[in-house]
Image (cartoon, rainbow, N blue to C red):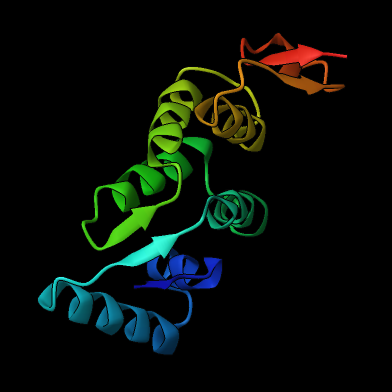
Length: 131
């Protein structure tokens, strides 16, 4: 199994570079045909959120929808998949920063009940504690 970098997922989702998008589509089709899969690290998910929001101005709901769609693809295996699923659910029903929520759910998934922060807004979320 091989891992994927953020830019591969961006090409797949945004389709802004036809040549690279076609390469990704062929790679995914081949994996589906051969029952293969790719690994997605949590860092790639975090960077994907940032790129979609900051560079492509994708709406919060569309970012969450894209992540949910990627999670449903059998050829993609995510690090901390349960944390990402819980993050998507929480983010769909709140206005907390997406990256903050992902950090909180990742730490929670690793067994930590709270994440210390100086961020006043994030500290209002149940999995953070303000220093």
